[in-house]
Image (cartoon, rainbow, N blue to C red; front, side, top):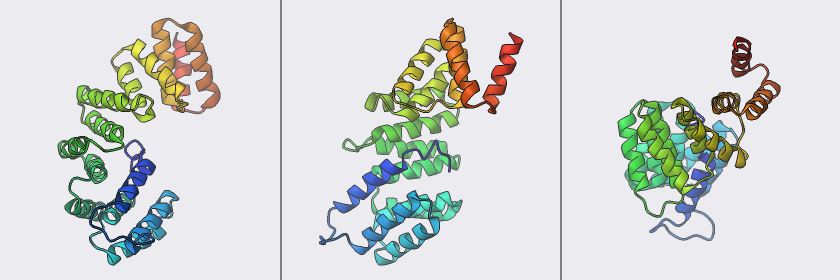
Length: 254
């Protein structure tokens, strides 16, 4: 499971579980119903990397209530993480058969389809999720859709999605990172600088890749102080990185 695709797990799970608790037509209890309680436990184990315990709780939740859609959705997430793609797809599809308009489920299945190379089909699910007018995390879906479009080589479409995400959440770091990459690849160095500054303002981690981009963007813009500053950060923070080696070669050749 690629980190770029799964950056929003905690927020999505929080949204998902909030939705479960208030799902219409479910009997009211003083505490959460057993299937919901075990799904919540499964999520907590999943967050902690305790996959075996998570699987046990989620399977129990499904046995307790086979129509409890969130349990199937989180099971799909876990199976995907374990590399069991057939089981993952089965669980994602089961969740959507129970709640076909749930934007979390649509987003998760879209992410899954993207990792399987089914980019057009994935985009259909992302677009359906984005149509929900009350969904609390539309920028997550837009960013995932942009990553998937970029994977397919459609840079224009990817940029539209990332801009949409940043319009909804201007400080969203994953979308800012993607716009840094796109702007630099296009030779739009002023935009690259602007997105890097916005990213840094959000206290985003300047990875070796981003520092190397910043060095070259500032070089093209003629700001030698900024160029030197980013170069020094790259050398000091990541001395053994591929980007630091590329920087050393670049400086030597100049």
